[in-house]
Length: 280
Image 1 (cartoon, rainbow, N blue to C red):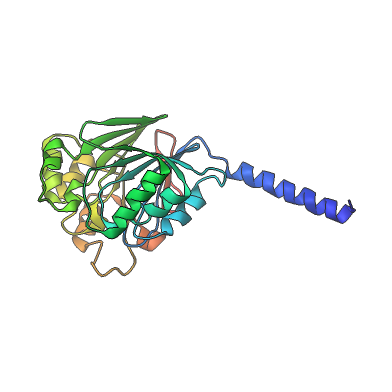
Image 2: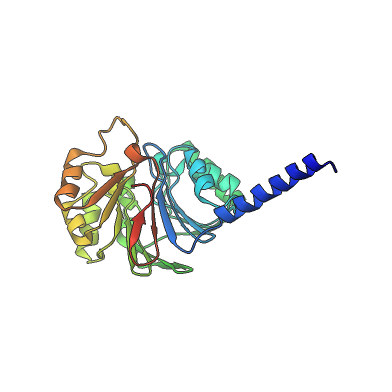
C-alpha cells in the first residue's frame, strides 16, 4: 500500500475511533426537550438507556434521536405516548420503523386519526411490549424510577372527556432529582391530582399543553415549585402559546423558563443531586 493511502486509512480509523469515544455516554441523566415545533417530544438518556415521551407532529424527532443517542445504538428502551393526538404521536411512526422499541407505554384510547392506525401497525411490526399506564404504577429502568400519577381507573372509565385529560402524567426520579411530565392535562385533571396529594417538590416540570392558558394552574406550580419550567412550543404558532398569563405566573414564582421556540432543543444533565442547563 502506498504511504499516502496508508496515511489516509489510518487517519480515517483514528477519526472513527475518536468519534466513538466522544459519542460514548456519560454517567449522568440527560433530559432533552426536542425542538419539534408545535408538539411534544422529550428524550431522557442515561448511559445506553433511552426513554422517549411523545414524538411530535412530524419526523423532526428523528433528528433529535440521532443527535443525542450514540450512533451505534438503534434501540429505545421505553417509549411513552401521553395521549393519541397528532402533535404527540405522528413522529413515533418512524421511530418504531427505524428503532427497536422494547416497551411502549400507551393508554387504551381510540383515535379517529387515520395516521394512528399506521402507528399501531408500526408498533405491531416492531413487536414491542405494550403496557397500559394507570395511577400508582411504578416503572424502574436502571437507576431511573417512573411513578404514574394519572390516568386513574375512574378517568379511564369515562368516555366523554377531552383526549388531553387522559394524558399520562408521571414523576421521574433519579437519585434526589425529580422531574414532572404533564402531557396536555387541563384544570379538571390538575385539580384531581392535587386533591390526592400526588404532587411532590420537583426540580423540573414540562409545562402542560404547550403553555396554554387553561393548561397550567397556579396551584400545580405552588405544589411542585420547580426550579426549571420547560415549554415545548412551535415558533409563531397560531394558538398564541405560551400564554402571557402562564409566563407571568412562572416569573412571579421565580421559576426559570426555557422554551423550544426560542432555544431549539432544551437539554439538562443531572448527577442525581443538582442539575445543569447545557444550553443556557
